[in-house]
Image 1 (tube, rainbow, N blue to C red):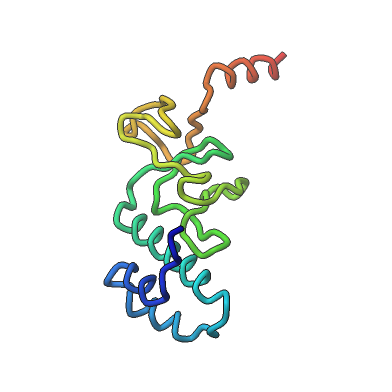
Image 2: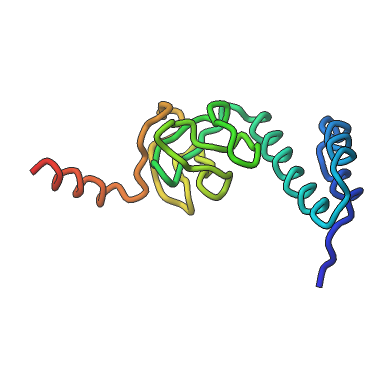
Length: 142
């Protein structure tokens, strides 16, 4: 069984330009049984925010509302990561949980096909199952 990392290893795993700030945060935490888990969670938040900041124009697709947005549009989620769907009527959050990277060729969420990324507009609905959605809309119009 693999052992958990030490606090020092967690601090060392944070990107260099955020390490000092992260180490200062860790130093302020009360050292108890949850400190390591808090540090691991906080390190993952830093990692997500750094990844999204490096590619603000990348497109993401939301599993909850089936709309697309760019990384720079995402809101802060409940753990502090900028990984929440930007649409006010949607509660989707979490990179690779609800928010999935939209490939430039139009593939997303395990290979589903959509329009090419260069044709997308923020808020555009890209249904996971387009045929079922069209059938539902036609049924609702009756």
